[in-house]
Length: 424
Image (cartoon, rainbow, N blue to C red; front, side, top):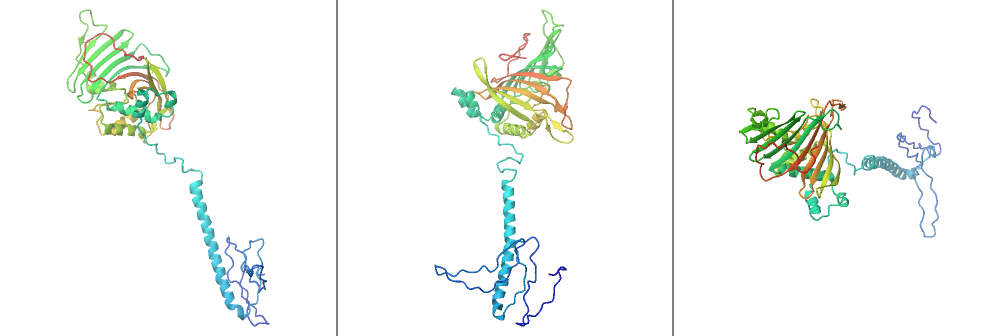
C-alpha cells in the first residue's frame, strides 16, 4: 500500500529476473471500470456441443467488489499476449467514455422532448390562425340547421372576426345610436342622452347625420347633410321653436363637418368601404393585439329570427412605456395598419383610448352582418396594470342597417329612435 500515492521503485523477481508490470495510470475519477487483473492460464473441457468456453479476460467490477491490484509475474512467452491485453484495456476505457457520453446525450434529448414543456403545448405565445367561417354559418342558417348543437362545432372567435370583417367591407352603412353616461356601471339611463342616426357612403363620402340631444327641458334636434365640402345644419329647438317656425338654421357647421360626424359612423369600433385586403389587414391587426376576448356565442331569438349573440371583452393590453396599457386605442391602431388616413377616410374609435369594454354583439347568421350591439365601458389600467376607477361609465346601443344608398335628409321634427331593437 502506498498512502502517499507516489510511484514506488519496481522490484526484480528473483526466480525470473524480470520486473512485474504495474498499471501506470489509475482509472480516472468518476469513471470506475474496475481494476483489471490478468488471469492465469486455465484449462477448459469442451462441452457437449464440442465448444470450448472462453474465459472473461477483463471482468468489470464496481468499487465494492473490485479486486485489489496485485503484482503478477509475466514470463517472456506471454509478452505478446500482454501487449494485446493492454490494447484491449485502452479500447474498453475509450468505449466506456463513449458510452457515458452517449447516455448523457440520450438523456438530453429525452429531457428536451419529454420534459415539462410538451411539444404539443403552444409555448411560443403565437395565436392560432384566424380562419373565416362565415360561409359555413350562413349555409347552416339558410338550411335551418343552425341549432344549439351545431353551434358547439363552430369556432366562436373565428365567427366573430368573420362578421366584423364582412361589416368592414360594406360600402354604405347606417347606424342608429343611443349614448349616455352613468355614475355607476349598472346605472339606468338618465334624462340626458343622445340618439343619433348616421348614414354614410364610404365611396362617395356622401352622408346624412341626425342627432337628438335630450335634456330635462326636451330634445334639441339637429339635421346635417352634404358631401366632403358642403354641409348645413338645421336645429329644432324646443325652447325657441314655435308653431310656425320649427327649424332654425344654424351657422355652426362644425358640428356637421365630416370629420366631426365620423364620431357616429358605424359603431365606434368598425368602419366600412374597405377592400378585401384592407379588411383582412384591419381584422388581423386587431386579432393580433389580443385585446378582444370572445367569451361565448349563443342563439338569441328576435322578431322571428335567431341571431348569434357574441359576448366579448376588450381587455387593455400592455404596449409601450409611453402608453403602458391600450384599450379602445387598439381599434384605431388596427385601422391605421391598413395604411388609410383616419382623418380623411374618416375613422374614429369610441371612448377613451385606455379604457376597456364589455360588448354584446348580435349577428344575423344568414348574412353574417351585425344587427345590434350593446357596449359599456370598463376601467382603464395604470402603469402597474391596476384598474383606474372611473368617475363615469359610457353606454352605447347601436342598431345596424346596410342600405344601397344614403338616406335622404328630411326636416322632420319626429324624434329618432330604433326601428326594431331596444334603444336602451
